[in-house]
Length: 120
Length: 109
Image (cartoon, rainbow over all chains, first blue to last red; front, side, top):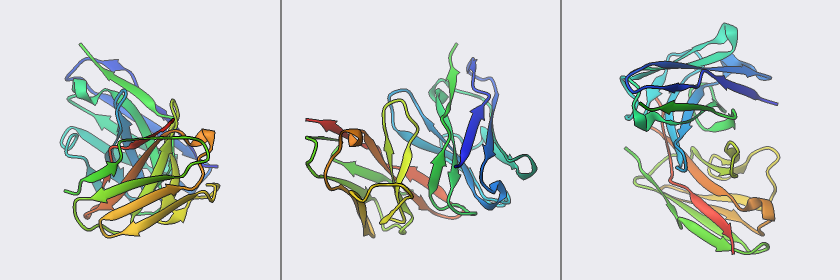
């Protein structure tokens, strides 16, 4: 069974930075694209960023482009999200998610999420 | 940019009834359309991928259909555990960009 565990969530002030990590196990990590998806309190799902199996294809939602950077380390079965210039509206539960394809097709597995709170 | 619209926003039904949920795209899209169920306090769960294929372990009462701009998730006979929020997800562009619909809440009537 696919296992995805997020870490790094915290409460930070606007303008500060935070780095999320996702440890993956029980599947061949470097065969699949990966994603970050977030959900603000009481709101719907918002796709944040995705990265292909070999990091050649990277994309971002308009709301985070230029502030967030996705990366992966296949040797460590890990996915990351560097979040800079955080805003109050970035407050959300952040999910690490696995794709069912190497370049990006559809999400088929999710972590339990990690909370990021941006507040002064 | 592709925008997904889900309707209705809320569906109030009784156990045993069938539910029909719609996901409409602002322009013609590929068949990379997925449906997810999210129960309160839980992570989403994949139900349907490629518009009409049931994910592993998903009961046969869940079915997906559609192409082009109009997609449908049907739950043939609602069980108590099916009352939840349902989202559609579409991939478009290259490198791939993804967008979720706003969700449909299925409530117990």
